[in-house]
Image (cartoon, rainbow, N blue to C red; front, top):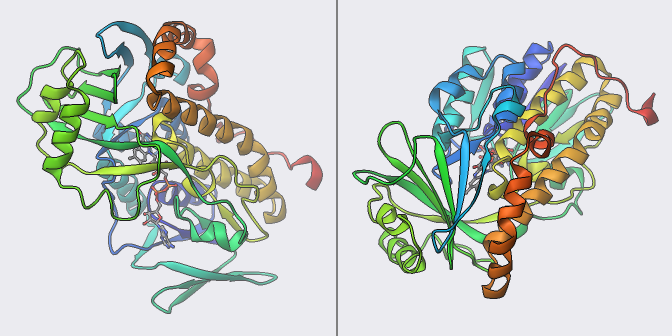
Amino acid sequence: MKALIIGGGIAGPVTAMALQKAGIDSTIYEAYPSGAGDTGAFLTFAGNGMNALAAIGADGPVREAGFDTPRLIFTSGTGKRLGEIPNGGAVSGGNVSQTIRRGDLYQALQSQAAERGIQVEYGKRLVDAHTGPNSVTALFADGTEATGDLLVGCDGLRSVTRRLIDPDAPVTRYVPVLNTGGFSAGVKVPGDPGDFHMMFGKRCFFGYVNAPNGEVWWFANPPRRDEPVSHELSAVESGQWKRTLTELFADDAGPAVEIIQATTNRLAAWSTYDLPKVPRWHNDRMIILGDAAHATSPSAGQGASMAIEDGVLLAKCLRDLPLADAFPAFTDLRRERVEAVVAAGARSANDKAAGPVARVIRDLMLPLVFRKMSTSKAQEWMYGYRIDWDSPVTPPARAA
Ligand SMILES: Cc1cc2nc3c(=O)[nH]c(=O)nc-3n(C[C@H](O)[C@H](O)[C@H](O)COP(=O)(O)OP(=O)(O)OC[C@H]3O[C@@H](n4cnc5c(N)ncnc54)[C@H](O)[C@@H]3O)c2cc1C
């Protein structure tokens, strides 16, 4: 079998490596002329994602590129401690969440795929595809095409593959917070390295962590009810973001303003989106994975892990089942979990965007919520998920 993988971000290289382990050849077709993106500066990579990478022996370089972030500590804008929760850890078999530059995560995955001999073709933007009884042909914007037995759409939020599978597929849903952040130097702030401090500020959510290299890595989620129009955010200069954020955190306790002022990178901000339910993930020869199928708000800290779990699990399904059964089996195994994660991310983002009244109630409730979330049982469903590479996948009931 030969797979055409569309998109060389996170799901793409992982799917290619997992398919190779399952004995299936693939080529990755990436729209951009080279790999690695830097949207979002850095991300939290959860222990369950690391477990999925370990299932195909691809966890090592990711672990080396990031640093352990075992604890989340929450405060309110008044400085009151609201609670703390472990960030993976015991339930993920010792894999605590990592904090990692986005570019380094992409690089760690893409270079492993290259070392394993997986071919990547850059500058190939999928625009259309045709399925026949025995094959699928992808058409690219540069006029070239490629044919294989199946096509895996790992083409992210604005997936073309999603629309090719179902022209009526839902589009992404705007989540009412922006995302910005960066790296600060020469500033001393409280906290052990690896403790991620999260503050529900009076007007904006803020998070920071002391990185092992002495920098402070931080992000902020300015609330924004209506979706920014195209290019609105990119037109705002870095200095303006600094001033806006400084104003947003001016009345809060804690080091947010000091950290923002010490930022060394150019500041930018992004709108955030999710995709709660895409009814059709596949047709006979094409399937979507990762953000293309179930984007989750960044607030969940799970989008990358979900994309990786998808790739490993799809490869298992294709290893053990004929194509006609593999896609439905994958969907049955994945849908409930990923939709629950997307819902958790949406709740978390909405908490960050609470108005003045909801904020008071939220800050009263959060200590109870964090106490509940701090137990292994409460964390198990999200962080304790494991893919056993060697166990066989059984056909879905309807196809058996
Ligand atoms: C600001 C921000 C912060 C985030 N923070 C976190 C976090 O802390 N933790 C976490 O786990 N997740 C986080 N996420 C989510 C995470 O980045 C995504 O869930 C993850 O990147 C999904 O991987 P993917 O491979 O499905 O898509 P992507 O990583 O988006 O990769 C898609 C690839 O497909 C390519 N492509 C697109 N269209 C085409 C086409 N037509 N033809 C060919 N190639 C195409 C793109 O160029 C890209 O390389 C965050 C996201 C954002 C925006």
